[in-house]
Image 1 (cartoon, helix red, strand yellow):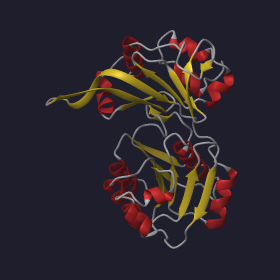
Image 2 (spheres, rainbow, N blue to C red; image 1 turned 180 degrees about the vertical axis):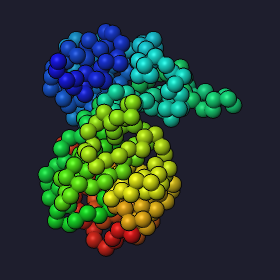
Image 3 (cartoon, one colour; image 1 turned 120 degrees about the horizontal axis):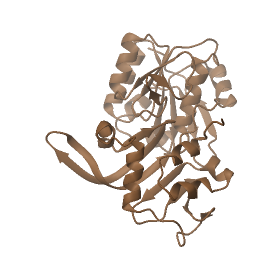
Length: 312
């Protein structure tokens, strides 16, 4: 039996005939697609290679005319499938505006805000979903590994806009460092706040992050980092999408504990992040010495080192 592709894993939660329409697309579309988007009353769209196009009959259309449209019933059906038909058991994730499905794919949710004193804030009457296709732990770019061999380990910040491949690069680095791609096998603590780095199901990672990796799933980054450092003696900690003061405080805890950090942050350039009130002090103090900037157009990586800070 052949292994499912990431595209097939994502389309499994789509209602018919949207699912069949997506699977009828040419194979190159499967490989390049980054997002499948359903909005109630609007054409189904797919995003990839920097362009938003629309689902036609066996092909993608540059214009929405003639495209297959999603209904409100189909949007809700997709959300129910993502929850394995148990919305109640996924309320914590829904309240944060996302779900994570088998394969580590993240599903963004839009809808009407609902609040009750008993359950708190959540989303219902779903209006749109965005299925972001995760590509697993691809091998780390050999050029990036050569960069580390030249400059050594250091606190690393992976920078790029949404959809540029930051998380994919992070997974590859986790697997490289925990799998012996460095001078030795490293103990890598993975803080997987949204379940898309490792996609743990039943206590087992669905994404291969290497034998030295261990995962704290669905904890906040601050709590997950604290647990990793306090109980698991990691060589380095990896986390996705830092950006607030709690995250920064947790990263500083790693530094004083002698633990390296690899993290991602949203921004077109490092200069963008210097204007982030939470991250600016870290950057000014030289907390990060290694920078990997990901291009959203071709997923290429530009690496540079700013020596000055060291672990601890």
